[in-house]
Image (cartoon, rainbow, N blue to C red):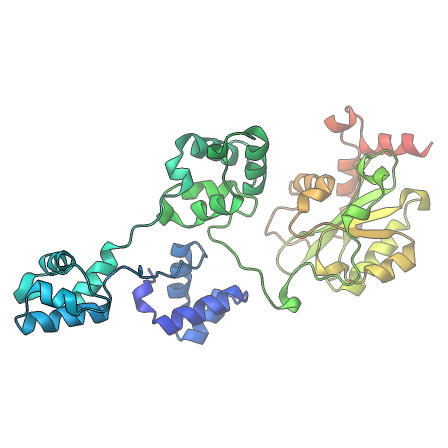
Length: 383
C-alpha cells in the first residue's frame, strides 16, 4: 500500500494540488513519476481527504532547542544552565524530563529526540461520533436501514432535537467518518449505502470544460410551473439517458401524471443528434401532451434552446447531483433494467423493439396509479 513516507513533501503538495483540481489519480501518478496504484492506495487510505497539516505547539521544544540541549550536555553543563540558555528560557524540569525520556546524558541525540516527540504528539481529536454513542447509533441506523444521505441525516437531527446540541452532527463529519477510517467512528461498509457508493471523497474539477452541469442558459427546475410539481395535469415529462455500455445508450421519457414511457434510440450523445432524435419521437403524441421536459445536468442537452424552438417545449434542469428531482424517471429507469441490464450493450435494439418494451411498461398496472395502467391514466386525461 502507498505509504505517505514514500512521497516527499513537495510531491505531496503537488499531489493534493492536482487532486483538488479534479485530475484523475492515474494522471497524477504520471506527473509524479509514480505507479498509479501507489497514488490510488494513498488516496484510498486518506479517504480522498487531504490530511490536516500538523503544527508544533508554540510552547513545545523545537529542533533548535534540542540541538542546544545536546551541545550543553556534550559540554557537561547542568540542566539549570542549559535551560537558562534556551531562547526563550525554560524551566530546568522541562530539560530534565526531555533528557530522561530520550536516552539520558550519554544517549541523548537531538534529531532522534525531536522525531520521537513528534510521534508522541500524534493524538487525533476524538470524533464527535465516537464521543457520543447514541448519536452514532442514530446516524448508522439512518444510513444502513433508511439509506438517507448525510445531508438528510444532519437536517433531520436539527429538527428532531432542536434543543439538544449533543445530538447534532454536520454532514461533512459524517462523510469524513466514512471515508477516513483513522477517525474510528463509522464502519467503512456503511459507505455502500450512500447513493454514489464511493469509498473516498471525489473533488470537483476546477476546469469548467470537465464539469458536469455546465449547460448554457439552463433554466432551473425551481422555475418549473407548479402544475408540473403536483401532477395535476398531463404534459410534463422527465427525461434522461439510460446507459448500456460506455459507448451506447437510449433516451427515456416519462410523463409525470400517468408514468407513460417513451424510449428513443440514440445515435450518440452529441447534443445536436440528441435534440433531433427527441424532437422526432415526441411528434408521435398530440401537442397538448407536451408542455415541459425536465432533464438531468447531462451535456447531451446543451442544445436545449434549439430543441425548444423546434418543439415549443420548455426544458428545465435539475440541480447538480440531484437525480431524485426526476423521481418518476429514475424509478422507471430502474424498471427498465429488467430489459436492459447494466453493462450490456443496447446498440443492437431497433426503435421498434424499444417501442415494444415501452408498451409492456405502459400496459402494466401500477400501484401508484391505483392499479391502473399508464395507458389508461393518459387516456382518461385526454378526454
